[in-house]
Image (cartoon, rainbow, N blue to C red; front, side, top):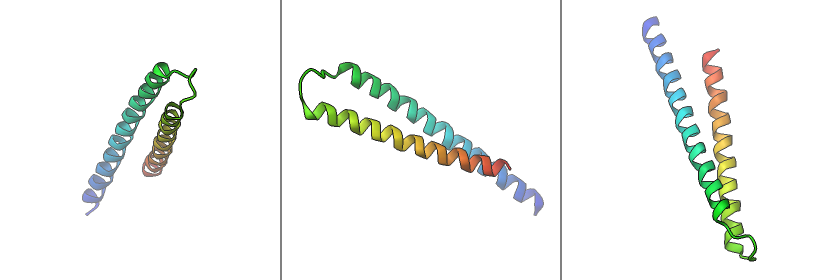
Length: 80
């Protein structure tokens, strides 16, 4: 019984680490996309579409950062 519990805890820890790795990869891709979008955006025109797309990308990055923080917190609790 004790061995099965230890194995289950290790699997849970590994899956949480894997989730954290996937979220970080997603975050890096989103940041690169945001940098690319900002580089390609022409801010001299008063186009609401370009501003809205930049705001949406920023909000998505903030959301992914919040998810990453939650997963990191969960992983820290599992390790303790």
